[in-house]
Length: 150
Image 1: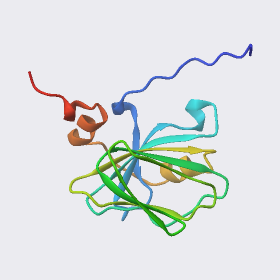
Image 2: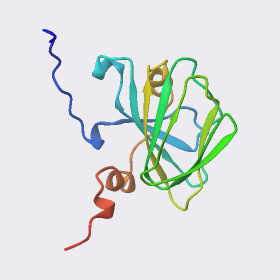
Image 3: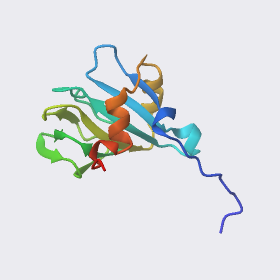
Image 4: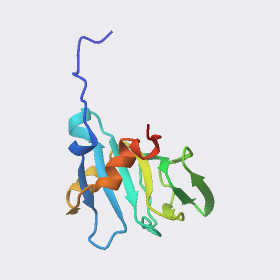
C-alpha cells in the first residue's frame, strides 16, 4: 500500500476547456483530464465532430489511444483497416497505428478519447484555437438528450 494519497478530482462539462487544434479543423476537443490534473501522463477528452468532420490521418509514436463512441456514427481507419462504429462501440489504436476518425452520421459525433501516455497531445490542444461547448453539446455530455420527458 502506498503512503502517497491523491485527492480525487471532479469536474463538470462546464469546467472543460475546449479547443480546435487548427482553426480549419472540423472537430472540437474538450479536455476532461490532463497530465497536470491527473498527476499522470494521460489525456482524457471528448472530441466533438461536425457533420462529415474528421481527424487528419496521423499516428502516435508511444501512445495507445482509445475511442469510445458516446453518440453518433463513425468510420475508424487504422493501418488501412476500416471499422464502422456506432454509439457504445470502441476501438483501441496501438502505438504507431496510422489512424483517423470520420463522422459518417447525420448530426454531430461525440467520442470519448483516452491517450496514454499523453505524448504532447494536451499541449497541442491547448495551443489551438479556443472554442466553446454549446447547449447541444452540454445536453449530450450530461446525457439529458436521452431522457424521456415526464
